[in-house]
Length: 293
Image 1 (cartoon, rainbow, N blue to C red):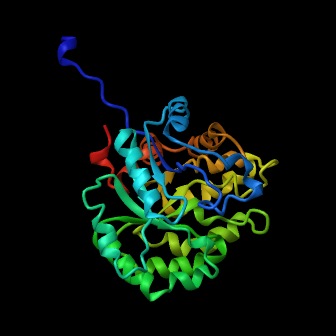
Image 2 (image 1 turned 180 degrees about the vertical axis):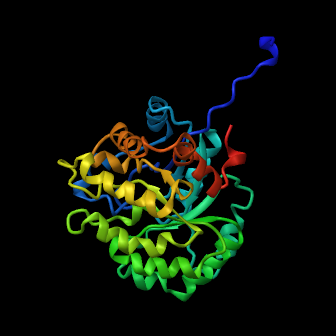
Image 3 (image 1 turned 45 degrees about the horizontal axis):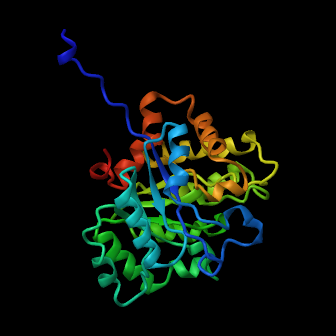
């Protein structure tokens, strides 16, 4: 056959489904405390792109890191300027009476694929998830076909399960495997508490954020891999996705460390399963198809 008529199949896209950009000021990011010294500076697209290239990752989903529509606008501006930023998970005040107007301002922003709130930082996260005003806002978010990222710590897994059961009109994504307390609980006990959430078919999970839940200086892959393997059993590759949590991960390791941990965890899976975890799940659940090259 003439080479003119032959073609090489395109490789499946690889996506980092969870990372952040910010222009740092202390008052805007109060959660960046003295322990997070490495994070007290700007992190912008030009800082991330070489790291993606080094690992053969085609693009990313930029996720909010503060409660600000201005930050959501800034992330969408980055995404408009950089085609490899495939999507944005932004923030809006879901409890606001004018939520519909807030969301309407982004009606033409194809790269706004989801929203998130830092529920883990609320004084009472479980009560927050039961707030009737928040529930009303979730209804509007899901009606618009936007995904929602659930950010909680493992002590609030039960409340998160109840929350996800009540909001089943669109995809929900659990960030960072629900932030297991690696210092106090063994993986099997954690998995038992995660199982009811994983049983909900509209809920997915990000394989992200574990190294910052471990001892930042002394973590070892052998301690973290059981959490990945158990998540694979509970959710399956079609509801799991890779996320670096860059630059937050820098307090405990570098981008390569996070990516290598993930690749080790999926190394025994089939090619199709690996492709789902590396990007296919994120593309499907966040609706990134039209935003990818």
